[in-house]
Length: 89
Image (cartoon, rainbow, N blue to C red; front, side, top):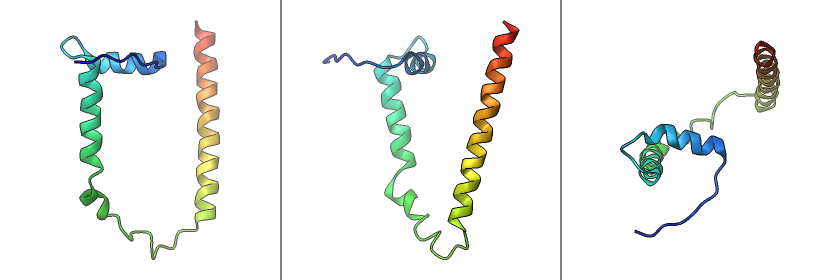
């Protein structure tokens, strides 16, 4: 089997290492993730959503504003929690 070196962040490495355990290789973990993703995104599974938003009464401008407001609030809470945790050290 050929070997290729790649560069990934520490977070990505730690995530893969957690999934890997002792009895799998990093390649095994990556290929399992690929298989799971492929099963989720089959053409058949995506077709069930075809046209679902066609006749919806969604106000996309309001939806986008709500999402942006939620993200801002979420990021603020994350930052506050991070600061509190640092102060507890």
